[in-house]
Amino acid sequence: DTEVIQTPKHLVMGMTNKKSLKCEQHMGHRAMYWYKQKAKKPPELMFVYSYEKLSINESVPSRFSPECPNSSLLNLHLHALQPEDSALYLCASSQDMGVESWIYEQYFGPGTRLTVT
Amino acid sequence: AQSVAQPEDQVNVAEGNPLTVKCTYSVSGNPYLFWYVQYPNRGLQFLLKYITGDNLVKGSYGFEAEFNKSQTSFHLKKPSALVSDSALYFCAVRDEMNRDDKIIFGKGTRLHILP
Image (cartoon, rainbow over all chains, first blue to last red):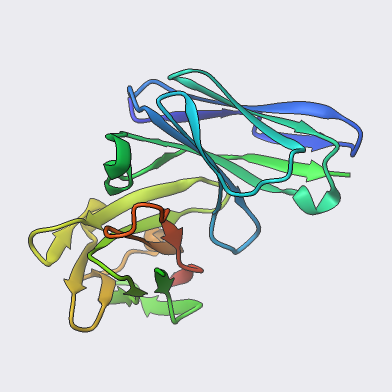
């Protein structure tokens, strides 16, 4: 099973709402990633978890809060977002061998299309 | 510092013709190079990668890429294009030497295969 599952597919939220994006993989991968992608642009890395520990935070605003409850699950908690946060949020996973993790290809989910009103 | 460039925003190819999508990179050490494809409203899908070894890398769906160290390029190729190859293609690179670097993606090239 090489699937990364993301829920929900679409999310519309107001600027005062709190919501969460969910990601799940059962490939035994130990690295999981959150990306933000604007239309017709490349993905921008937000967070990386390696062995359930946050290893990279790309200076993302605190209104985005990641969580990795276990090796198969990754959440992104959203609070007080701005309209400019509207984007496709992609989750990905890969094998992780410590510092050599970047040699492994990433498996991406279909994304959550987020609209902030 | 590492960087990756995809010089073409869009490439148009007739069905059945060979296709090339260009990618050049800049790294301090040896590069790890990847190609991904993105279909509309979908996540990225891995096509192929170069880490070490043979310069010609074969990947999914009949795609291949050639690592050229002297020209710092990793162009994606396919001998005969299909209409279903129409999508957005991303080249990505990571510098093997700099352990603090993350993978970075090129801006993307939209491939249109004309029937």
